[in-house]
Image (cartoon, rainbow, N blue to C red):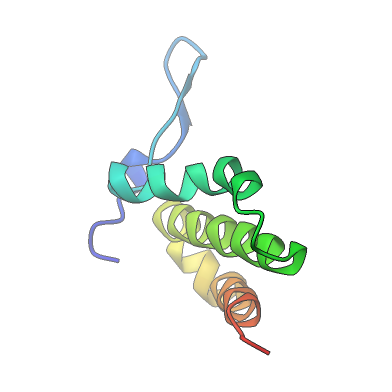
Length: 95
């Protein structure tokens, strides 16, 4: 949480072009999360349910880091972070 940085989030540059940020999440973690959808097709031993769960977990993990970096007050006060954590809790259940 301490490394999340709003200045490192996606934003528009002075020329109107998108500057892609990382919200303070290190490049290795973002790379690992971004590759999940690409490698799932090779994981034919996983059930479709497992594929969906892995996609959801990677998406929520990436999204919550950006959300907390960009606007932590709103994320916490309006329950956005709690809902994302509940989603992550749900997709990581084994039963």
